[in-house]
Image 1 (cartoon, rainbow, N blue to C red):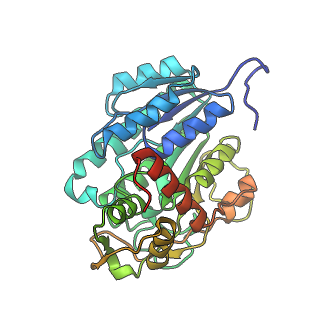
Image 2: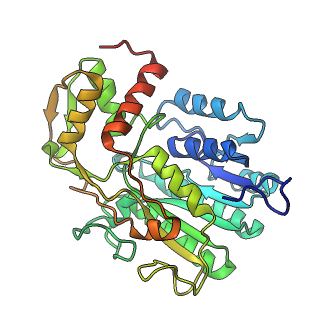
Length: 347
C-alpha cells in the first residue's frame, strides 16, 4: 500500500476515531507502523475500565507521529478543530457507543454517540473531502435475518436493538452524504471481533476473567449460539487493504458488489465465514487456560441472535484477502496477552 501523498517525503495523514478503543487502537498502531501520521480521537467514556483505554493510548503516544484529542464525538466544535488540525487524507470512523446489551439500559448514549457523533464526523469529512471515508458498522444490522451467510446486498431492515438501529442509520446517513458531496465512503460490518487488548464486556474477556477467578461463566442461549469470530489482526488487515480501494460511482468491482447506484459508497462484510458454536469456543478457552470452566446455562438475552455468519466474497474480491486465523490461535494469543497485562498467575 502506498504510504505517501504527493512525494515519497510526505507521509499520508489519517484521522481515526476511537483510538483508545479496542479496534481503533489496533488500526492506529498498524498505520503508525506503516509510516502514517495519525490523529486519534477518543472520549474516554466510562462504559468500561478507563484505565485500559488509557493504557492503549499510552502505547500509541510512544510514536511522535500520533496526536491524540480526548474529546467527545458529540462536541461539534471540538471535532471540527480536530479535523482542521489533522487535514486527513483518510478518515476511519471507529468510535461509537458499543454493546448490544447496554443499549437496553442506556439508549440515549447510542443516539448521542452513534447518530449525533457520526453526523459531526460526517461534517468534518464534508469540509475536508478526504480521499476515502471508512466507518465501522456491525453484523447486528442483519437483525432478524435468518438466511445465511449474510451478504451485503441482503435486506437489513429489521434491527433487534437500538445499537443495531443506530449503526444502520449511520450507514444510511453516510450514503446520503456520499451522494451529495461525492466523498468515497466504505462502511464495513464487523463480525464478533476478539483478540489482545479486547473489551472487558465481550464474551472472551469475561470468560477468561471469570475462569481464572474460579467463578462460573454465564452461558446465554444455553450454549446453542454460533458466532463468526474474527481475530483482530485479520480485521485490521482487511481495513488497511480497503483504504486504497475507494468506491467509484458506476464502477462495480464484481457482480456481487454492494456499490450504490447513486453514490461512491459501498458496504463490506469483514468476517471469515466460519461460524463457531459457543460451547466449542468455551472448550477452546478451557484448553488455552488449562482450566475447566464452571458453567451457568441461561436463556437467550433480549436482542441477541442465535447465529452470525458472514459472506466474505466481496471483501476478497476487493482486497484479495479473507480473515482466516483459527479460533484456537486467536484465543491462545488473547490468553497470553491477558496473563501479561493483568499479571494473572499461571494455573
